[in-house]
Length: 105
Image 1 (tube, rainbow, N blue to C red):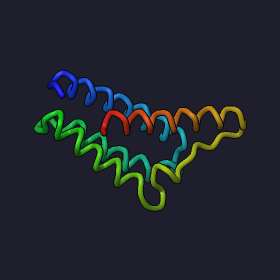
Image 2: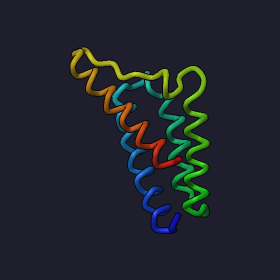
Image 3: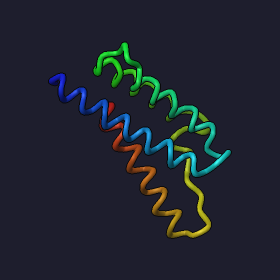
Image 4: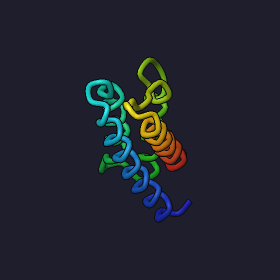
């Protein structure tokens, strides 16, 4: 894989994790645990001394850790008072997780 491709994947992953963080923050205190896990993913992707390949690998490892255990990515859902809004928010959440996993794989 070319360096340009790796750089582009890293940049897209950074944007996606930022979007996920913003979405999780809408849950207030309920999302704090997952927010902290996503900060680890972002830190791995932002680490300036890492090559793009290393940052993607480290981000993938952090995402894997964020997926397990109580309060992980798969346990989390967005709560809304309106059912339609909640469904749409959770679809977006799942889309962002899938997009992040795709960039990091």
